[in-house]
Length: 302
Image (tube, rainbow, N blue to C red):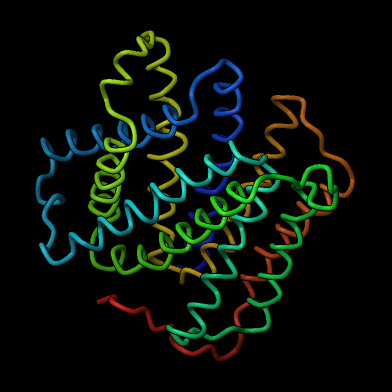
């Protein structure tokens, strides 16, 4: 039952990310800088949480000093890194190429978990990995050579984004086992917020003179793309191992494509539909538990 709860939580998080991609696309069509969207959504979420828990539950802000480097690592190299390089990849190439390269992350996590953490690679998990990769390939139109183009810089950025997303899953797991979801989220978002301050100065945002309505939209994006999904994702990581979590997260591009189809009038042909079914099948395969499965060893977890 706990494992099923973990899958559902991860799936909800991925769904929020998929929907937020459509919302972000609407903003980009209104000439809002993607960098501003990425930066403000993280910063707003962090400010809301630190103020709320600083007033109501200060005990949740207590962490061990020796864990600060890990929070910085997950927040900067994991969360901020995956966001930054993903959008950099889109800028240099296109969405289809960026998604295909970034979603090699499940393979990276699976290899790390199997080789380093001695996590059992069951036949169902392996099949789910193959189905999810094939599903994403078809869903984003990877079979169309006209969609798969981009500079070497764009492809390299997407690959770094994949590494960052892998780091987020692998290194984030021990933090969720030691601290509450709220504590983990606050400090991971805090680290990411500090990172963005160096990438884009707050003074540059002030000089942009965004309207009150713009800030309301930024707050909404922060809620549906950062605050809610990461609460669900970190909660899900408490119940399932990183490999299963990241394979389940491949639901994100599927939701993005389907929501774009209904909201933005995007395309959803037969082959893309097959891709969607393959991803859903992959998530279904993860629910099959072998009769005997070795205990998963998570490095650094207590």
